[in-house]
Length: 281
Image (tube, rainbow, N blue to C red; front, top):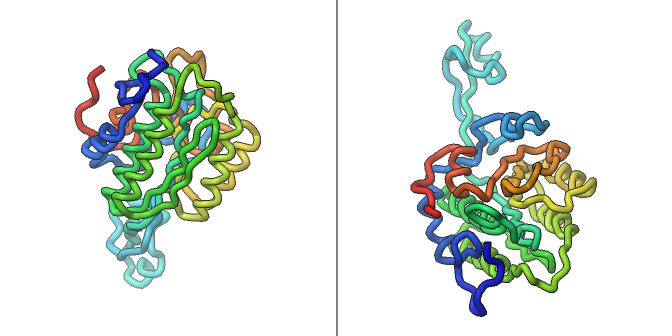
């Protein structure tokens, strides 16, 4: 794919994203859920990963047991008192902040099919951000490149979402194949460490990255994040790569996103829900 944009960078399909393009993704984000439809290990094709805890649950009511109910939800006190099995029903918490960690380093400025990795990461983050705001929850982000990072603490507003998308676009359009900037694999850990400081507990943290530079420190930070939050790795990869990074040691669900397929279509398949018509290449 072409690497060098014109002097005034504009959105070039698959190479650079624009704000208008990311705003339009709101129409494809409706109906997508942040729950994997498959166990994480099946998504990884044998690699080990923990299951997502999902959103927090509040106790709602007790009802008569129905065959197929999870035995762990049986209310034994009510069952003993009535002589009939009863189960506790839970409702999802409505407020669970989502923190996006979006990689726009030079290692992401690569792709041999539909999009560059940087575009796939940007689009998947935008889709996630729209779904969070449309659902009435708070969204924040840590967007990073080789030179630094920008952090947005979770807020519940369209204005916050647009600020996040604007930062993603700025980082994305600054990428150049002939850049003088030196690759900085360590920025991954710096971004994750900042995310850990923002997400104290009960957040959903989505990391869209190729995980270039992942090491023992990465595992330590992710493990600390995952102790009190739901962490999901959106592993962005290109079919030209011989193999995916060994992600099982992170101990969190890993959802592979390929540059060869539309990001919204992949997220719909992996997380559930319809995201409308796929982009035509």
